[in-house]
Image (tube, rainbow, N blue to C red):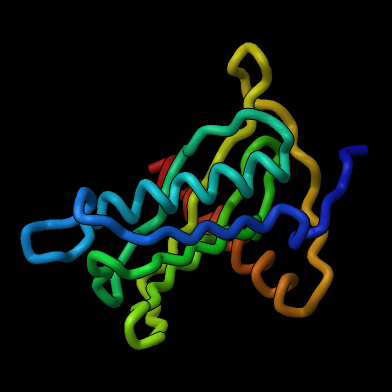
Length: 156
């Protein structure tokens, strides 16, 4: 039997002040810079869950709700929402804090699929996920549905 881990055990949070190097000449942070941070925080959550090296297999659609500006803090929270045999779905919620006003705004939500690898680079089994609260069970069921939809797209 595979080992089991609760959802909350692998949560990862990343906060970063956004600097001019990541911005356009208008002062808006590039979407690619945010995407890189999303991938990094998802990597931490997936690695914590699997205790293996992981690679990104897919990322679902990503829509930006509010811009991030130079000097804003970006907060990214990653949580495993569903696991298959070797793959894990990670939900990443991104918000931004305007430091001068304290206003916190939603930026994006992304769902990434990461696969755990052994030392030779082959997919390896990951621990089962144990949802413990009603919200975690809901997220798990939603993750299961998204996985089925992803697999349909891949097969077509």
